[in-house]
Length: 271
Image (cartoon, rainbow, N blue to C red):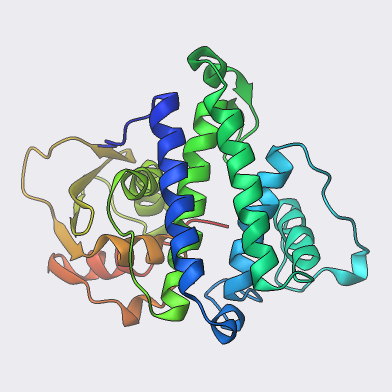
């Protein structure tokens, strides 16, 4: 079951942790590395950072850049993607030094604003990318999003890191919340089946899903799972976010091989 701490202070600290890790990674990059394509269609390493800058700028109340319909790339499929692309396109005008300065400016501003909020303000109703909820839920998703984009940057430049810790736990929690849908709908697990996903690190946990009319994550199983999948947590996140071909990920499958393969090849759930 989900385990990350979700107090206002904890979620704010998870964002700070991730943004600091991105800052440290960015300081290591040479000019050519900023231009390396990432797993997100049309985005370079620099574009990944620009996306984070754009989203946090929007949350800080800064105006979204405008553009014409003819400027929308073919990989944009919805309004959220369109807004993301507007910021990325605008920030491509900045060189990496100025882009990193902008990242530091806006994340410092956002942390100051988050730390000024009282705990009860985190319970106020809010739009989120997964529907209406509260501000706490929105910021949990921001941890997930920023951590995943950091991993996109790291994968592109071959600098793995920040795979564990509170922010990574929050990111894995976010995927765990979607596993009922992923395994029940996308993988088509049959009724009365059970699946265990063992994450071997840096985030270590066993996630159990039971299909009883509908698929749901449960704390424990009453009998051995029909199939167990074992893999690293960073690979698990990459699969869940559609960043990597499942055939290129090392996954140990024990038990029902057909069901295990269906789960392994249908983990992607993000837009």
